[in-house]
Image (cartoon, rainbow, N blue to C red):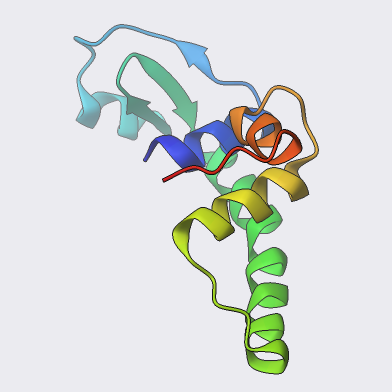
Length: 100
């Protein structure tokens, strides 16, 4: 889950927590624990709203242009689309560094 978390942190605030926090207790509060990061559920909704139209466009490109979307190409495309220097994948796209 590290790739989408990079994009999610660009959508809304992620908070620093503790590794020892109980996942069930966090979920009851509408928060997801990812390691020691605390991610409100709404952040995932914002991510889905952002990524879904991109994936739809990529499917269209695949069907019309026979684009072969490998995991590395998908990550690169999302890095291009995020257009946010807080994203690691923004920089890998900008500097043409493939991610495997």
